[in-house]
Length: 184
Ligand SMILES: [Zn+2]
Image (cartoon, rainbow, N blue to C red; front, side):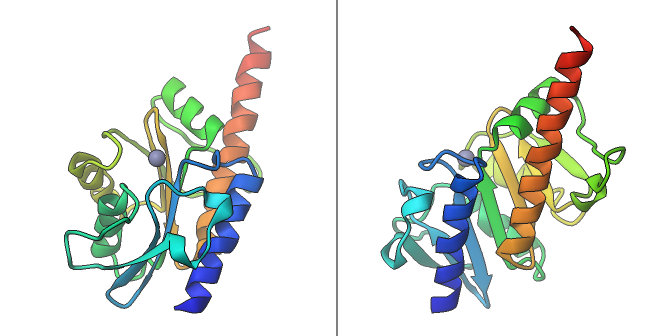
């Protein structure tokens, strides 16, 4: 449990440091057996400590002080036992490109395939509707962009999530500038 908390603290610093999220937004969780460790509501991701990581029961509805996106995290874990970690960021270019394009694909870029298929979903932050919409695509993808909001990436560990989320942001930024330059 302590090692998992350390991982969350480490990746909290990384996502803010890499510009994938402003400090106040976003959340991080990991799953171990029937428990979820998730960042507390209203925390700064680059200032986490043990007290700001809440341990919740995967099968219980309520969990005091947990992130407001807990319902979305839970629904992802419940759909697939192999998912052990989730990273939610407000990656600027990923969200921007998802608001400009009907679909996002980076297959034509060198290494673009490491992200895999990307789904764009709709739903209000922390809502059951958003949890359901992401739940529908959990088994067919590892990353979604919630339109006009942020990104959820999942995987076997936080490093895997981080690679996917940061790669999506890198290619989104590249695509945005290519689009912009092509219109000059
Ligand atoms: Zn968010």
